[in-house]
Length: 159
Image (cartoon, rainbow, N blue to C red; front, top):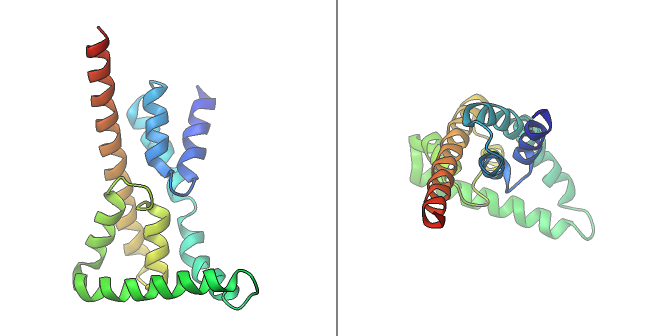
């Protein structure tokens, strides 16, 4: 059983897959939801401080390097321009917007992307983490409920 929790932890740390993939794995392995969510949440949130504090510095560092400079500059410019538009639209609801963005269980809308955006926008770290955790938990529950429903429908059809 420990090996299954290791895989939940590891899968939840991967960008784009994150806790959404870990919950799918847990559901497929018949692992109880609460322990899977706790392990997955820890794994998903572990990289967050590193992403927040170092991503912008890393992108800035790489922006003037040969071969990678153009793509690093693209990500910085794109992140800042999109972020400014979001700030203008969301106003005081910026952290609610971050929560909703992370809560949508689609590829590219998880903790990695959300915290990267908050880093580029120089949003408050603690408030960003709270919004991100809430979004991650919401997305995980949505994925679990959807997966459970699909599995039950499949079992009913197979019977």
